Image (cartoon, rainbow, N blue to C red; front, top):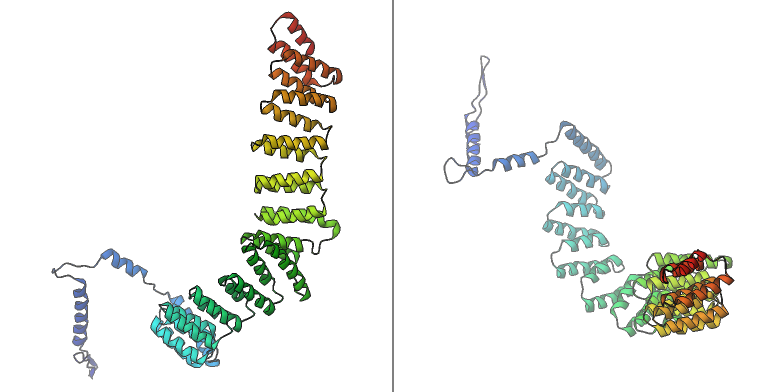
Length: 516
Protein backbone atom coordinates (compact mmCIF):
# COMPACT_ATOMS: atom_id res chain seq x y z
CA UNK A 1 0.00 0.00 0.00
CA UNK A 2 1.40 3.39 -0.96
CA UNK A 3 0.18 4.98 2.24
CA UNK A 4 1.89 2.44 4.42
CA UNK A 5 5.51 3.39 4.85
CA UNK A 6 8.01 2.32 7.38
CA UNK A 7 11.13 4.25 8.07
CA UNK A 8 13.83 2.66 10.09
CA UNK A 9 16.51 5.18 11.08
CA UNK A 10 19.31 4.68 13.46
CA UNK A 11 20.54 7.84 15.10
CA UNK A 12 22.56 7.53 18.27
CA UNK A 13 21.01 4.07 18.90
CA UNK A 14 17.45 5.46 18.64
CA UNK A 15 14.95 3.74 16.20
CA UNK A 16 11.87 5.51 14.87
CA UNK A 17 9.07 3.32 13.42
CA UNK A 18 6.02 4.81 11.76
CA UNK A 19 3.19 2.30 11.35
CA UNK A 20 0.27 4.70 10.97
CA UNK A 21 -0.46 3.65 7.34
CA UNK A 22 -0.64 -0.04 8.20
CA UNK A 23 -2.93 0.68 11.15
CA UNK A 24 -5.25 2.71 8.96
CA UNK A 25 -5.43 -0.07 6.37
CA UNK A 26 -6.29 -2.66 8.98
CA UNK A 27 -9.01 -0.39 10.34
CA UNK A 28 -10.49 0.05 6.88
CA UNK A 29 -10.66 -3.71 6.26
CA UNK A 30 -12.22 -4.34 9.67
CA UNK A 31 -14.80 -1.62 9.05
CA UNK A 32 -15.77 -3.15 5.71
CA UNK A 33 -16.20 -6.56 7.31
CA UNK A 34 -18.43 -5.12 10.03
CA UNK A 35 -20.46 -3.20 7.47
CA UNK A 36 -21.20 -6.45 5.63
CA UNK A 37 -22.51 -7.98 8.83
CA UNK A 38 -24.94 -5.13 9.61
CA UNK A 39 -28.26 -4.25 8.00
CA UNK A 40 -29.68 -0.88 7.04
CA UNK A 41 -30.74 -0.17 10.59
CA UNK A 42 -27.84 1.40 12.39
CA UNK A 43 -26.47 -0.59 15.29
CA UNK A 44 -28.33 -3.83 14.44
CA UNK A 45 -26.53 -6.96 13.22
CA UNK A 46 -27.79 -9.77 11.03
CA UNK A 47 -25.11 -12.20 12.14
CA UNK A 48 -26.53 -15.28 13.87
CA UNK A 49 -24.28 -15.69 16.92
CA UNK A 50 -25.12 -19.37 17.38
CA UNK A 51 -24.59 -20.17 13.72
CA UNK A 52 -21.38 -18.18 13.65
CA UNK A 53 -20.00 -20.10 16.63
CA UNK A 54 -21.10 -23.39 15.07
CA UNK A 55 -19.27 -22.57 11.85
CA UNK A 56 -16.18 -21.72 13.84
CA UNK A 57 -16.34 -25.02 15.70
CA UNK A 58 -16.48 -26.91 12.40
CA UNK A 59 -13.16 -25.47 11.29
CA UNK A 60 -10.51 -28.12 11.86
CA UNK A 61 -7.39 -26.79 13.49
CA UNK A 62 -4.52 -29.14 12.90
CA UNK A 63 -2.42 -30.00 15.90
CA UNK A 64 1.33 -29.64 15.86
CA UNK A 65 1.67 -33.43 15.61
CA UNK A 66 -0.63 -33.55 12.59
CA UNK A 67 1.22 -30.72 10.90
CA UNK A 68 4.45 -32.53 11.59
CA UNK A 69 3.06 -35.76 10.06
CA UNK A 70 1.90 -33.88 6.95
CA UNK A 71 5.30 -32.27 6.55
CA UNK A 72 7.03 -35.63 6.90
CA UNK A 73 4.68 -37.09 4.28
CA UNK A 74 5.44 -34.19 1.95
CA UNK A 75 9.18 -34.70 2.31
CA UNK A 76 8.90 -38.45 1.81
CA UNK A 77 6.69 -38.17 -1.26
CA UNK A 78 8.88 -35.43 -2.72
CA UNK A 79 11.78 -37.83 -2.41
CA UNK A 80 9.72 -40.51 -4.18
CA UNK A 81 8.84 -38.13 -7.03
CA UNK A 82 12.39 -36.90 -7.38
CA UNK A 83 13.75 -40.44 -7.42
CA UNK A 84 11.18 -41.82 -9.85
CA UNK A 85 9.13 -39.09 -11.51
CA UNK A 86 7.44 -41.68 -13.76
CA UNK A 87 5.87 -43.43 -10.78
CA UNK A 88 2.19 -42.46 -10.91
CA UNK A 89 1.15 -43.59 -7.39
CA UNK A 90 3.72 -41.17 -5.93
CA UNK A 91 2.01 -38.20 -7.60
CA UNK A 92 -1.41 -39.43 -6.56
CA UNK A 93 -0.33 -39.86 -2.95
CA UNK A 94 1.27 -36.41 -2.87
CA UNK A 95 -1.90 -34.80 -4.23
CA UNK A 96 -4.03 -36.60 -1.67
CA UNK A 97 -1.80 -35.44 1.16
CA UNK A 98 -2.35 -31.83 0.07
CA UNK A 99 -6.08 -32.47 -0.32
CA UNK A 100 -6.23 -33.91 3.20
CA UNK A 101 -4.38 -30.85 4.47
CA UNK A 102 -6.97 -28.59 2.84
CA UNK A 103 -4.57 -27.38 0.14
CA UNK A 104 -6.79 -28.14 -2.85
CA UNK A 105 -4.98 -25.73 -5.15
CA UNK A 106 -1.64 -27.30 -4.30
CA UNK A 107 -3.15 -30.79 -4.82
CA UNK A 108 -4.35 -29.82 -8.30
CA UNK A 109 -0.99 -28.32 -9.18
CA UNK A 110 0.80 -31.50 -8.13
CA UNK A 111 -1.51 -33.84 -10.01
CA UNK A 112 -1.16 -31.72 -13.15
CA UNK A 113 2.58 -32.12 -12.88
CA UNK A 114 1.93 -35.84 -12.47
CA UNK A 115 -0.05 -35.90 -15.72
CA UNK A 116 2.90 -34.28 -17.50
CA UNK A 117 5.39 -36.68 -15.94
CA UNK A 118 3.24 -39.83 -16.31
CA UNK A 119 1.13 -39.32 -19.42
CA UNK A 120 0.57 -43.07 -19.77
CA UNK A 121 -0.86 -43.60 -16.27
CA UNK A 122 -4.66 -43.75 -16.38
CA UNK A 123 -4.86 -43.59 -12.58
CA UNK A 124 -3.07 -40.22 -12.55
CA UNK A 125 -5.43 -38.80 -15.17
CA UNK A 126 -8.47 -40.11 -13.30
CA UNK A 127 -7.17 -38.58 -10.07
CA UNK A 128 -6.68 -35.26 -11.82
CA UNK A 129 -10.26 -35.38 -13.10
CA UNK A 130 -11.51 -36.13 -9.61
CA UNK A 131 -9.72 -33.17 -8.07
CA UNK A 132 -11.02 -30.64 -10.59
CA UNK A 133 -14.48 -29.18 -11.27
CA UNK A 134 -16.64 -30.97 -13.83
CA UNK A 135 -15.87 -28.81 -16.86
CA UNK A 136 -12.15 -28.82 -16.18
CA UNK A 137 -12.30 -32.58 -15.58
CA UNK A 138 -13.81 -33.06 -19.05
CA UNK A 139 -10.88 -31.19 -20.59
CA UNK A 140 -8.42 -33.27 -18.58
CA UNK A 141 -10.00 -36.53 -19.71
CA UNK A 142 -10.08 -35.33 -23.31
CA UNK A 143 -6.30 -34.85 -23.05
CA UNK A 144 -6.01 -38.24 -21.35
CA UNK A 145 -7.63 -40.18 -24.22
CA UNK A 146 -5.16 -38.63 -26.62
CA UNK A 147 -2.34 -40.14 -24.59
CA UNK A 148 -4.09 -43.40 -23.63
CA UNK A 149 -6.74 -44.14 -26.27
CA UNK A 150 -7.12 -47.74 -25.07
CA UNK A 151 -8.07 -46.85 -21.49
CA UNK A 152 -11.62 -48.09 -20.88
CA UNK A 153 -11.75 -46.49 -17.45
CA UNK A 154 -11.07 -43.03 -18.82
CA UNK A 155 -13.85 -43.30 -21.40
CA UNK A 156 -16.29 -44.56 -18.76
CA UNK A 157 -15.38 -41.69 -16.42
CA UNK A 158 -15.70 -39.18 -19.25
CA UNK A 159 -19.17 -40.53 -20.04
CA UNK A 160 -20.17 -40.23 -16.38
CA UNK A 161 -19.25 -36.56 -16.40
CA UNK A 162 -21.71 -35.80 -19.20
CA UNK A 163 -25.14 -34.55 -18.16
CA UNK A 164 -27.32 -35.99 -20.93
CA UNK A 165 -27.60 -39.35 -22.66
CA UNK A 166 -26.73 -38.10 -26.14
CA UNK A 167 -23.39 -36.76 -24.90
CA UNK A 168 -22.73 -39.99 -22.97
CA UNK A 169 -23.47 -42.01 -26.10
CA UNK A 170 -21.06 -39.89 -28.13
CA UNK A 171 -18.26 -40.45 -25.61
CA UNK A 172 -18.88 -44.20 -25.39
CA UNK A 173 -18.96 -44.59 -29.16
CA UNK A 174 -15.63 -42.79 -29.38
CA UNK A 175 -14.39 -45.24 -26.80
CA UNK A 176 -15.68 -48.21 -28.82
CA UNK A 177 -13.91 -46.93 -31.90
CA UNK A 178 -10.67 -47.09 -29.94
CA UNK A 179 -11.58 -50.25 -27.98
CA UNK A 180 -13.92 -52.37 -30.13
CA UNK A 181 -13.32 -55.50 -28.04
CA UNK A 182 -14.16 -53.97 -24.65
CA UNK A 183 -17.19 -55.76 -23.21
CA UNK A 184 -17.48 -53.13 -20.49
CA UNK A 185 -17.82 -50.29 -22.99
CA UNK A 186 -20.33 -52.25 -25.07
CA UNK A 187 -22.46 -52.86 -21.99
CA UNK A 188 -22.36 -49.21 -20.98
CA UNK A 189 -23.30 -48.10 -24.50
CA UNK A 190 -26.13 -50.64 -24.86
CA UNK A 191 -27.66 -49.71 -21.51
CA UNK A 192 -28.30 -46.18 -22.83
CA UNK A 193 -30.23 -47.36 -25.91
CA UNK A 194 -33.86 -48.35 -26.39
CA UNK A 195 -34.74 -51.91 -27.46
CA UNK A 196 -34.40 -51.37 -31.22
CA UNK A 197 -31.09 -49.52 -31.06
CA UNK A 198 -29.81 -51.94 -28.43
CA UNK A 199 -30.53 -54.83 -30.82
CA UNK A 200 -28.50 -53.13 -33.53
CA UNK A 201 -25.60 -52.44 -31.17
CA UNK A 202 -25.68 -56.01 -29.83
CA UNK A 203 -25.54 -57.31 -33.39
CA UNK A 204 -22.26 -55.44 -33.84
CA UNK A 205 -21.05 -56.33 -30.36
CA UNK A 206 -21.27 -60.10 -30.87
CA UNK A 207 -19.16 -59.71 -34.00
CA UNK A 208 -16.52 -57.71 -32.16
CA UNK A 209 -16.56 -59.75 -28.93
CA UNK A 210 -17.85 -63.23 -29.87
CA UNK A 211 -16.46 -64.64 -26.61
CA UNK A 212 -18.97 -62.66 -24.53
CA UNK A 213 -21.83 -64.93 -23.45
CA UNK A 214 -23.74 -62.01 -22.00
CA UNK A 215 -23.86 -60.25 -25.36
CA UNK A 216 -25.20 -63.32 -27.16
CA UNK A 217 -27.86 -63.95 -24.54
CA UNK A 218 -28.91 -60.30 -24.45
CA UNK A 219 -29.27 -60.26 -28.23
CA UNK A 220 -31.30 -63.47 -28.17
CA UNK A 221 -33.68 -61.99 -25.59
CA UNK A 222 -34.37 -58.98 -27.84
CA UNK A 223 -34.98 -61.02 -30.99
CA UNK A 224 -38.07 -62.85 -32.21
CA UNK A 225 -38.29 -66.60 -31.62
CA UNK A 226 -36.89 -67.58 -35.01
CA UNK A 227 -34.13 -64.97 -34.93
CA UNK A 228 -33.28 -65.91 -31.35
CA UNK A 229 -32.81 -69.51 -32.48
CA UNK A 230 -30.38 -68.34 -35.15
CA UNK A 231 -28.52 -66.14 -32.66
CA UNK A 232 -28.12 -69.01 -30.18
CA UNK A 233 -26.97 -71.37 -32.92
CA UNK A 234 -24.28 -68.84 -33.85
CA UNK A 235 -23.40 -68.48 -30.17
CA UNK A 236 -22.98 -72.26 -29.80
CA UNK A 237 -20.56 -72.27 -32.71
CA UNK A 238 -18.60 -69.38 -31.19
CA UNK A 239 -18.69 -70.83 -27.67
CA UNK A 240 -19.03 -74.61 -27.98
CA UNK A 241 -17.90 -75.24 -24.38
CA UNK A 242 -20.34 -72.86 -22.66
CA UNK A 243 -23.41 -74.58 -21.23
CA UNK A 244 -25.37 -71.36 -20.59
CA UNK A 245 -25.97 -71.01 -24.34
CA UNK A 246 -27.56 -74.47 -24.47
CA UNK A 247 -29.67 -73.76 -21.40
CA UNK A 248 -30.87 -70.49 -22.92
CA UNK A 249 -31.87 -72.39 -26.07
CA UNK A 250 -33.85 -74.89 -24.00
CA UNK A 251 -35.60 -72.11 -22.09
CA UNK A 252 -36.40 -70.38 -25.38
CA UNK A 253 -38.19 -73.49 -26.66
CA UNK A 254 -40.02 -73.98 -23.37
CA UNK A 255 -41.22 -70.39 -23.54
CA UNK A 256 -42.71 -71.12 -26.97
CA UNK A 257 -44.55 -74.19 -25.69
CA UNK A 258 -42.38 -76.68 -27.55
CA UNK A 259 -41.57 -78.74 -24.48
CA UNK A 260 -40.71 -81.86 -26.46
CA UNK A 261 -37.70 -80.06 -27.94
CA UNK A 262 -36.35 -79.04 -24.52
CA UNK A 263 -35.16 -82.50 -23.54
CA UNK A 264 -33.50 -83.03 -26.91
CA UNK A 265 -31.56 -79.77 -26.52
CA UNK A 266 -30.37 -80.63 -23.01
CA UNK A 267 -29.39 -84.16 -24.04
CA UNK A 268 -27.42 -82.77 -26.98
CA UNK A 269 -25.85 -80.15 -24.70
CA UNK A 270 -24.51 -82.74 -22.27
CA UNK A 271 -23.02 -84.82 -25.09
CA UNK A 272 -21.57 -81.79 -26.90
CA UNK A 273 -19.93 -80.40 -23.77
CA UNK A 274 -18.39 -83.78 -23.03
CA UNK A 275 -17.09 -83.92 -26.61
CA UNK A 276 -15.42 -80.51 -26.18
CA UNK A 277 -14.02 -81.60 -22.79
CA UNK A 278 -15.90 -78.94 -20.87
CA UNK A 279 -15.72 -79.92 -17.21
CA UNK A 280 -19.12 -79.42 -15.57
CA UNK A 281 -19.77 -81.09 -12.23
CA UNK A 282 -23.04 -82.66 -11.19
CA UNK A 283 -23.44 -79.97 -8.52
CA UNK A 284 -23.08 -77.25 -11.17
CA UNK A 285 -25.73 -78.87 -13.33
CA UNK A 286 -28.13 -79.12 -10.38
CA UNK A 287 -27.50 -75.45 -9.63
CA UNK A 288 -28.30 -74.66 -13.26
CA UNK A 289 -31.52 -76.64 -12.91
CA UNK A 290 -32.55 -74.64 -9.86
CA UNK A 291 -31.70 -71.38 -11.63
CA UNK A 292 -33.75 -72.45 -14.66
CA UNK A 293 -36.69 -73.21 -12.40
CA UNK A 294 -36.32 -69.83 -10.67
CA UNK A 295 -36.45 -68.12 -14.07
CA UNK A 296 -39.73 -69.84 -14.91
CA UNK A 297 -38.49 -72.83 -16.88
CA UNK A 298 -39.44 -75.99 -14.92
CA UNK A 299 -39.26 -78.25 -18.00
CA UNK A 300 -35.69 -77.16 -18.63
CA UNK A 301 -34.88 -77.82 -14.98
CA UNK A 302 -36.40 -81.31 -15.19
CA UNK A 303 -34.49 -82.08 -18.40
CA UNK A 304 -31.20 -81.00 -16.84
CA UNK A 305 -31.86 -83.22 -13.83
CA UNK A 306 -32.78 -86.21 -15.97
CA UNK A 307 -29.58 -86.11 -18.02
CA UNK A 308 -27.08 -85.14 -15.31
CA UNK A 309 -28.32 -86.44 -11.93
CA UNK A 310 -26.38 -89.70 -12.27
CA UNK A 311 -23.02 -88.13 -13.09
CA UNK A 312 -20.24 -89.41 -10.87
CA UNK A 313 -22.54 -91.26 -8.44
CA UNK A 314 -21.56 -94.80 -7.49
CA UNK A 315 -24.39 -97.34 -7.94
CA UNK A 316 -24.50 -98.20 -4.24
CA UNK A 317 -24.79 -94.50 -3.32
CA UNK A 318 -27.53 -93.53 -5.76
CA UNK A 319 -30.52 -93.95 -3.48
CA UNK A 320 -29.07 -91.99 -0.58
CA UNK A 321 -27.50 -89.31 -2.79
CA UNK A 322 -30.64 -88.67 -4.81
CA UNK A 323 -32.84 -88.57 -1.73
CA UNK A 324 -30.49 -85.97 -0.21
CA UNK A 325 -30.44 -83.98 -3.46
CA UNK A 326 -34.24 -83.86 -3.52
CA UNK A 327 -34.44 -82.83 0.12
CA UNK A 328 -31.88 -80.06 -0.42
CA UNK A 329 -33.66 -78.72 -3.49
CA UNK A 330 -36.95 -78.69 -1.60
CA UNK A 331 -35.40 -76.75 1.28
CA UNK A 332 -34.15 -74.14 -1.18
CA UNK A 333 -37.60 -73.77 -2.69
CA UNK A 334 -36.73 -75.54 -5.96
CA UNK A 335 -39.85 -77.72 -6.02
CA UNK A 336 -39.75 -78.64 -9.72
CA UNK A 337 -36.11 -79.64 -9.41
CA UNK A 338 -36.84 -81.77 -6.34
CA UNK A 339 -39.80 -83.35 -8.17
CA UNK A 340 -37.60 -84.18 -11.16
CA UNK A 341 -34.92 -85.72 -8.92
CA UNK A 342 -37.47 -87.92 -7.18
CA UNK A 343 -39.04 -88.93 -10.50
CA UNK A 344 -35.65 -90.06 -11.76
CA UNK A 345 -34.87 -91.84 -8.49
CA UNK A 346 -38.21 -93.65 -8.58
CA UNK A 347 -37.59 -94.77 -12.13
CA UNK A 348 -34.45 -96.49 -10.84
CA UNK A 349 -35.94 -97.66 -7.51
CA UNK A 350 -39.69 -98.08 -8.15
CA UNK A 351 -40.24 -100.22 -5.07
CA UNK A 352 -38.57 -98.00 -2.49
CA UNK A 353 -41.25 -96.94 -0.04
CA UNK A 354 -39.08 -94.16 1.42
CA UNK A 355 -38.80 -92.47 -1.98
CA UNK A 356 -42.56 -92.67 -2.57
CA UNK A 357 -43.17 -91.24 0.88
CA UNK A 358 -40.79 -88.36 0.12
CA UNK A 359 -42.57 -87.72 -3.19
CA UNK A 360 -45.99 -87.76 -1.52
CA UNK A 361 -44.83 -85.31 1.14
CA UNK A 362 -43.43 -82.99 -1.54
CA UNK A 363 -46.76 -82.89 -3.36
CA UNK A 364 -48.71 -82.52 -0.13
CA UNK A 365 -46.75 -79.42 0.89
CA UNK A 366 -45.95 -77.85 -2.50
CA UNK A 367 -48.10 -79.51 -5.13
CA UNK A 368 -51.74 -79.43 -6.17
CA UNK A 369 -54.53 -81.82 -5.25
CA UNK A 370 -54.25 -83.35 -8.68
CA UNK A 371 -50.48 -83.84 -8.50
CA UNK A 372 -50.81 -85.38 -5.04
CA UNK A 373 -53.50 -87.77 -6.28
CA UNK A 374 -51.33 -88.77 -9.25
CA UNK A 375 -48.32 -89.54 -7.05
CA UNK A 376 -50.46 -91.52 -4.60
CA UNK A 377 -51.98 -93.47 -7.50
CA UNK A 378 -48.51 -94.29 -8.83
CA UNK A 379 -47.32 -95.28 -5.35
CA UNK A 380 -50.35 -97.54 -4.84
CA UNK A 381 -49.78 -99.15 -8.23
CA UNK A 382 -46.11 -99.83 -7.51
CA UNK A 383 -46.66 -100.89 -3.88
CA UNK A 384 -50.23 -102.25 -3.74
CA UNK A 385 -49.67 -104.01 -0.43
CA UNK A 386 -48.65 -100.79 1.33
CA UNK A 387 -51.98 -99.67 2.78
CA UNK A 388 -50.97 -96.14 3.71
CA UNK A 389 -50.90 -94.88 0.12
CA UNK A 390 -54.42 -96.21 -0.57
CA UNK A 391 -55.72 -94.74 2.66
CA UNK A 392 -54.13 -91.32 2.18
CA UNK A 393 -55.42 -91.12 -1.38
CA UNK A 394 -58.95 -92.02 -0.28
CA UNK A 395 -58.82 -89.51 2.56
CA UNK A 396 -57.58 -86.72 0.28
CA UNK A 397 -60.45 -87.34 -2.10
CA UNK A 398 -62.92 -87.46 0.74
CA UNK A 399 -61.59 -84.21 2.23
CA UNK A 400 -61.93 -82.60 -1.20
CA UNK A 401 -65.63 -83.58 -1.24
CA UNK A 402 -65.22 -86.42 -3.73
CA UNK A 403 -66.86 -89.20 -1.73
CA UNK A 404 -67.50 -91.39 -4.74
CA UNK A 405 -63.86 -91.07 -5.74
CA UNK A 406 -62.80 -92.12 -2.25
CA UNK A 407 -65.05 -95.18 -2.51
CA UNK A 408 -63.42 -96.12 -5.80
CA UNK A 409 -59.97 -95.93 -4.24
CA UNK A 410 -60.99 -98.09 -1.31
CA UNK A 411 -62.60 -100.61 -3.65
CA UNK A 412 -59.24 -100.94 -5.42
CA UNK A 413 -57.56 -101.18 -2.02
CA UNK A 414 -59.88 -104.07 -1.06
CA UNK A 415 -58.88 -105.91 -4.22
CA UNK A 416 -55.19 -105.51 -3.38
CA UNK A 417 -55.55 -106.03 0.40
CA UNK A 418 -58.60 -108.20 1.11
CA UNK A 419 -57.44 -109.05 4.61
CA UNK A 420 -56.37 -105.54 5.67
CA UNK A 421 -57.99 -104.33 8.84
CA UNK A 422 -56.97 -100.73 8.11
CA UNK A 423 -58.64 -100.68 4.69
CA UNK A 424 -61.89 -102.18 5.98
CA UNK A 425 -62.06 -99.75 8.87
CA UNK A 426 -61.25 -96.80 6.60
CA UNK A 427 -64.07 -97.79 4.24
CA UNK A 428 -66.48 -98.16 7.13
CA UNK A 429 -65.44 -94.80 8.55
CA UNK A 430 -66.02 -93.12 5.19
CA UNK A 431 -69.60 -94.38 5.06
CA UNK A 432 -70.15 -93.70 8.73
CA UNK A 433 -68.93 -90.08 8.50
CA UNK A 434 -71.01 -89.41 5.38
CA UNK A 435 -74.22 -90.58 7.07
CA UNK A 436 -74.38 -93.97 5.38
CA UNK A 437 -74.73 -96.07 8.54
CA UNK A 438 -76.17 -99.10 6.73
CA UNK A 439 -73.25 -99.15 4.28
CA UNK A 440 -70.86 -98.93 7.22
CA UNK A 441 -72.68 -101.77 8.97
CA UNK A 442 -72.38 -104.01 5.91
CA UNK A 443 -68.69 -103.25 5.54
CA UNK A 444 -68.00 -104.02 9.18
CA UNK A 445 -69.93 -107.29 8.89
CA UNK A 446 -67.73 -108.27 5.94
CA UNK A 447 -64.65 -107.17 7.85
CA UNK A 448 -65.58 -109.48 10.75
CA UNK A 449 -65.76 -112.33 8.27
CA UNK A 450 -62.67 -111.57 6.15
CA UNK A 451 -60.34 -109.64 8.43
CA UNK A 452 -61.57 -110.13 12.01
CA UNK A 453 -59.76 -108.33 14.80
CA UNK A 454 -60.46 -106.80 18.19
CA UNK A 455 -60.59 -103.29 16.63
CA UNK A 456 -63.09 -104.42 14.00
CA UNK A 457 -65.40 -105.72 16.75
CA UNK A 458 -64.93 -102.54 18.76
CA UNK A 459 -65.79 -100.32 15.75
CA UNK A 460 -68.80 -102.52 14.96
CA UNK A 461 -70.09 -102.20 18.52
CA UNK A 462 -69.40 -98.46 18.54
CA UNK A 463 -71.47 -98.00 15.36
CA UNK A 464 -74.42 -99.77 16.91
CA UNK A 465 -74.04 -97.84 20.15
CA UNK A 466 -74.03 -94.48 18.36
CA UNK A 467 -77.16 -95.53 16.48
CA UNK A 468 -78.68 -96.48 19.87
CA UNK A 469 -78.88 -100.17 18.99
CA UNK A 470 -77.61 -101.10 22.44
CA UNK A 471 -78.70 -104.74 22.31
CA UNK A 472 -76.86 -105.34 19.03
CA UNK A 473 -73.86 -103.51 20.44
CA UNK A 474 -73.76 -105.79 23.48
CA UNK A 475 -74.08 -108.86 21.29
CA UNK A 476 -71.06 -107.74 19.25
CA UNK A 477 -69.11 -107.00 22.43
CA UNK A 478 -69.82 -110.43 23.83
CA UNK A 479 -68.83 -112.05 20.54
CA UNK A 480 -65.66 -110.00 20.38
CA UNK A 481 -64.69 -110.87 23.96
CA UNK A 482 -65.15 -114.54 23.26
CA UNK A 483 -62.47 -114.21 20.55
CA UNK A 484 -60.31 -111.51 22.09
CA UNK A 485 -60.66 -111.77 25.88
CA UNK A 486 -57.61 -109.58 26.50
CA UNK A 487 -58.93 -106.49 24.68
CA UNK A 488 -59.81 -104.10 27.52
CA UNK A 489 -61.74 -101.56 25.46
CA UNK A 490 -64.52 -104.04 24.74
CA UNK A 491 -65.05 -104.60 28.52
CA UNK A 492 -65.11 -100.85 29.11
CA UNK A 493 -67.61 -100.20 26.32
CA UNK A 494 -69.86 -102.98 27.59
CA UNK A 495 -69.79 -101.55 31.10
CA UNK A 496 -70.53 -98.01 29.81
CA UNK A 497 -73.54 -99.18 27.80
CA UNK A 498 -75.01 -101.05 30.78
CA UNK A 499 -74.35 -98.31 33.34
CA UNK A 500 -74.91 -95.18 31.25
CA UNK A 501 -76.96 -95.90 28.14
CA UNK A 502 -79.50 -98.45 29.47
CA UNK A 503 -81.94 -97.92 32.31
CA UNK A 504 -80.42 -97.87 35.77
CA UNK A 505 -82.07 -101.06 37.03
CA UNK A 506 -80.41 -103.72 39.11
CA UNK A 507 -79.93 -106.18 36.26
CA UNK A 508 -78.15 -103.67 34.02
CA UNK A 509 -75.94 -102.45 36.84
CA UNK A 510 -75.05 -106.02 37.72
CA UNK A 511 -74.15 -106.71 34.09
CA UNK A 512 -72.03 -103.53 34.01
CA UNK A 513 -70.24 -104.72 37.13
CA UNK A 514 -69.41 -107.99 35.41
CA UNK A 515 -67.96 -106.17 32.42
CA UNK A 516 -65.78 -103.99 34.64
